Image (tube, rainbow over all chains, first blue to last red; front, side):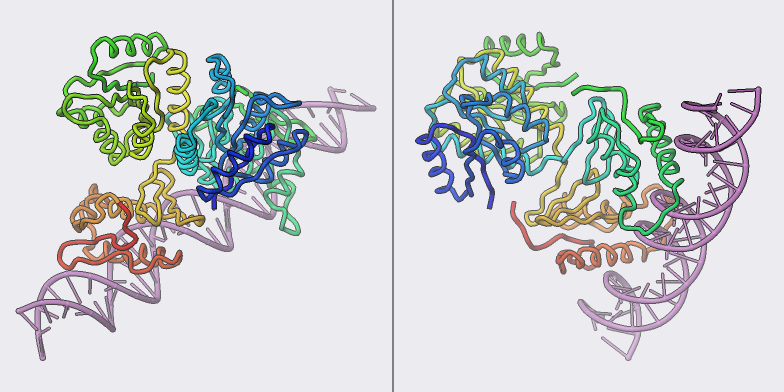
Length: 225
Length: 225
DNA sequence: AGAAACCTTACAACAACTGTAAGTATTAAT
DNA sequence: ATTAATACTTACAGTTGTTGTAAGGTTTCT
């Protein structure tokens, strides 16, 4: 069953939405504490998030931005703010749809279904600005080109991307790659870094992995977010 | 540059939309002949399709359905019909967004950007009802599970899926797999079919490929569309 | 029964990936 | 400048997965 999280501060409206969704067969979870909203949503890992913009502490915009940064689900903004610039701003921050109150239940359901369906067919992409990594398929997309990475290359690339622009410690990589092994040669990480760098070279992405002596490695250049 | 196709019969409105889009940097193509609309759109292979519902011959709904059946781009319905049931119907047939006239240019642009971005990150999935094939990554999705196919297995599966529920001729498969080779053993296709069948067995999909004696092979069961 | 079409299994060649080893280059500190 | 630590590169071999060939078995139809 698909799970939907509601981030809404108005009790009445929340209950109304919840009722509509549950009648439709969705499992619903409401966020009450807005301090821990992000963690709660992340741990619920819902198929969709319904977000109000008028919230007590945090602004709905901030939550929207934060959710998107964590790569979290489709966001449907449901609000009484019917100003165009609010809608544009929401889209800008990564909202996937924008519905204003009052709304018709069926319209809400239709748009929810559409968004969930769209996201179900999305690639899980890690974005680095000028290229993307499909974590599942271990495929790197550079514009129209794409290149398939080996298992090890994928693990390293993923770690570098997730940490970017921070440094990934050597021990971190060792544990990701050979965490279950009793012992591996110290050199092996360097060998694998060389191989990844060579692979990146072949698609015109040279000098993108910087060595931080004594600490680890770091993805550089082409920054975007 | 992203290309957008406009399917709109009102000349003034068409010009207005085109102007808005071109100012935004999109390449625009208008469909004038509604007889060959589908072929024209397919050959343009746009990043997005703007569709009006009130068209002379064909109904916008029919076009919508047909476009989706061909797996074509995101569809944004832009219409003067502001009845809820029209919107629901459009969503039902596969429309990805629904905007009513009059509309603000910026709202249109925002939603276009969102849709294009969403679709850019979509997996190209061939749907067989109870399982899907990611053509790019050669990965088969069965519910929550996924299995990686070899190159040959992927080619065969793709051909079977595209033809389904029709039969794929042996010669067709030979040409797809070894079209460039001077000669290959007649037996090799059978061997590869056995291997694909065994792979499918491992994910609980037995007896899904039927042999049509003297002709070729055919995907069966689990039909949906 | 017998022939044609199809299936299965085993084998070997080949390519991709990975870890080890050995040697080279770079960096930082004295 | 010398030296030691750190990092890089290259070559080699074991392993695995993919593919084509060959040989023999099974099914289907007349």
